[in-house]
Image (cartoon, rainbow, N blue to C red; front, side):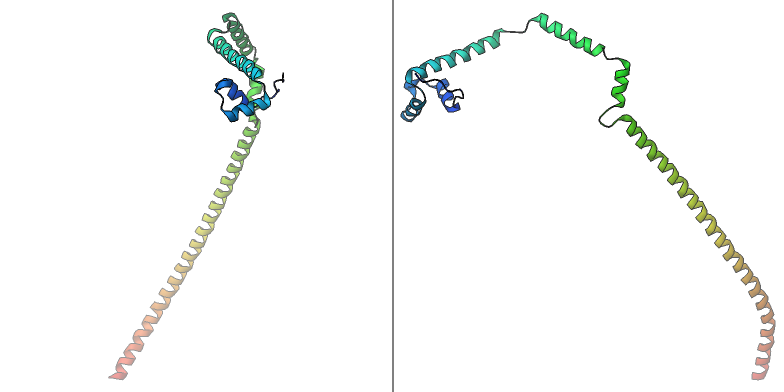
Length: 172
């Protein structure tokens, strides 16, 4: 009698579960005959079907003992309660990215932003004062030019009137 191979071919196992030897086709019979005898096929088929049936029956009727369930739940509750406050605190600060590193990065970002704002405000004030000073210089220069132009115009206007009179007299 041949021994059942340790690694049973899935196709052979499927045939054992689905068909009796007399229900096999001619090609299936020749293929099975190369691996097992007819008697072995029947024995293995019976074994597989009874095992499958026993597992189904056991799965339907067998439930875990309630005492085991209660014991496991109590142990789980005990483990949850046994965590000390220092372990909880450690768990908060030691993540894959530790909390202190995140806090340090946030502080550095906040400090950088503060310095940047101070620099921008100083630059803005400096630009404001420089621009204001330039405008004041321009206004003063314009006022000086206006006063000079006014003095010049008043001086020329008298001379220009005389010249116009001369021109008018010479034309007539």
